[in-house]
Image (spheres, rainbow, N blue to C red):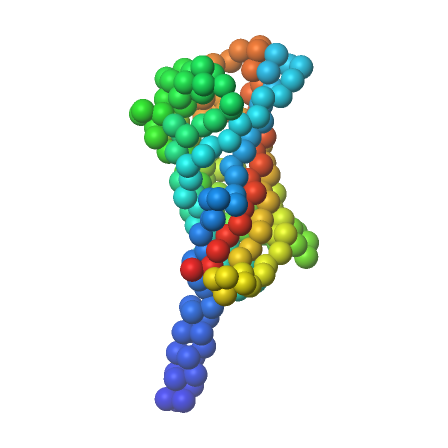
Length: 186
């Protein structure tokens, strides 16, 4: 009996230690978006300040993400538009300095593809969002000797469901997100 308990304890410890923290390398990652303007063109932008972490095993299986993106770091290459997007008309960055995402489920859909569902909190509203994911690969970094994983996440967010901006014919309701990540195992 003691041997069985000992073996279960060792297996439990091995399972727990198989998980590690991975952090986004912000210099090699981008949180981008696109939205329709005047129903004829797309405006693209990105958020420059973010903290993205995941807990996953060495094959980046079953990741559990924690995301914090600073809304004031929005950048669409137009200062006047960016200032307007930071205002109470849209993100209200002063009252809502972050948008967050926390994983609630992970579903493997192919050899390198998956669906990641989580709670997105934006503009003080929390709703479930599902992102399509692709694991581009995992390597051992020559300099750091640590594992690095490349990922791409895509999805669509209904900005009106989160109270971002008003209902206007000049701006699309759906925002397409494209998040390219280089995650470094810690």
